[in-house]
Length: 172
Image 1 (cartoon, rainbow, N blue to C red):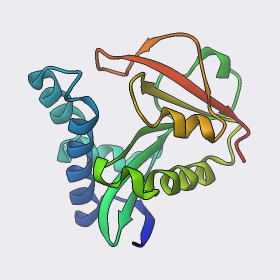
Image 2 (cartoon, rainbow, N blue to C red; image 1 turned 90 degrees about the horizontal axis):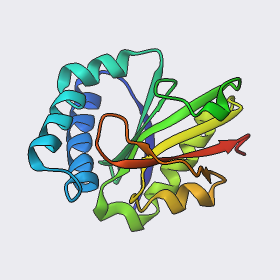
Image 3 (cartoon, rainbow, N blue to C red; image 1 turned 90 degrees about the vertical axis):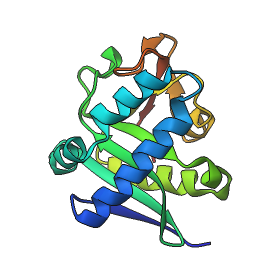
Image 4 (cartoon, rainbow, N blue to C red; image 1 turned 30 degrees about the vertical axis):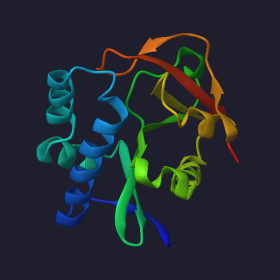
């Protein structure tokens, strides 16, 4: 099994891979917590052709896709967008957002490779934050790489799910 991580831009190939991944991973992550209609609205609003092209072309974002034997298996958005934890107010910080791996690949190690590549991209920053829903099974992975779970409970972006911030300072 060959794992490859590639930066993605708004090409036909990149957009097609992201459209498939974002939809499938959102369903896997949230379907047991959200009503089907809300789930579909979330996907249609955030992961349609137009929205993804805008996000792919934004200077605030970098997108990585993880491939297993040339098959898209996961992705991450690295961005300066999002509500930043107040403890990072005066720090040069970046966010790892929308980190996801298809369930059938989770135990293949791809999530570790994708996180490691993300951390390399984030290296110039003083801090990295993640806002993730509390039930996400990948939280342990983030903590194993130096992210510290914050005590406060928040809401996950535009979804009615409890979330928490994980923060890493000077990740190596």
